[in-house]
Image (cartoon, rainbow, N blue to C red):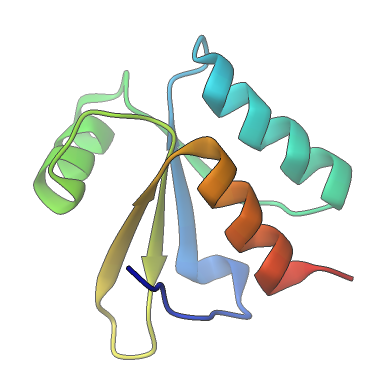
Length: 91
C-alpha cells in the first residue's frame, strides 16, 4: 500500500500509548530528526475512538496522514512510520 506524500506536518497525527516501546521508538526518532508531530494518546477516549473508527485497529503507534483531498490514511508499524517520515522530511 502506498501512502500520500505530504510536506506539511499539520497533515499528520501520531496515535500513541506512552508506555508502548514502539511508540517511544517513533517519538525518539522524531525528536532526533527535529520533527514535531501532534501526539494523540489513546488513553483519551476520543482519540481511541478516532483510531478505531478511522484505522480499524487499536494498534499503536499509528500515523494518520491526511492527503491533499482531505482523505485520511492510517499507517501502522513503527519502522514503517519512521521510514515514511525519513522519506518525507529528510534534511
